[in-house]
Image (cartoon, rainbow, N blue to C red; front, top):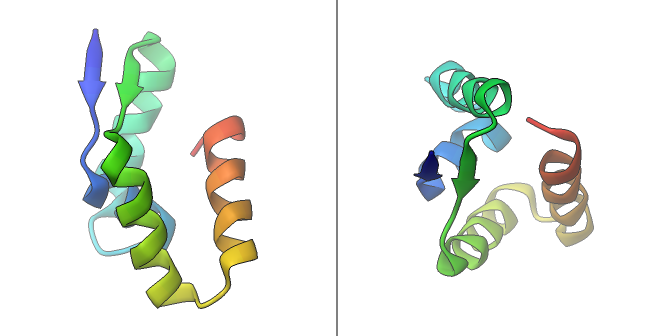
Length: 73
């Protein structure tokens, strides 16, 4: 199974917005089932831009995203 993940799902988890539990549960299921989870190329730049506005530290954003991608949500 292949899933296309919306930008807001990722932002919910990273920013710990209300309702982020549902987003985290989605990624737990992806990890458990081995389903493929994908985002669009434009989502990467959108996520980075929005996080830069919220966090104001590009190195911290890179660290957060790389940590989440390689070591799980």
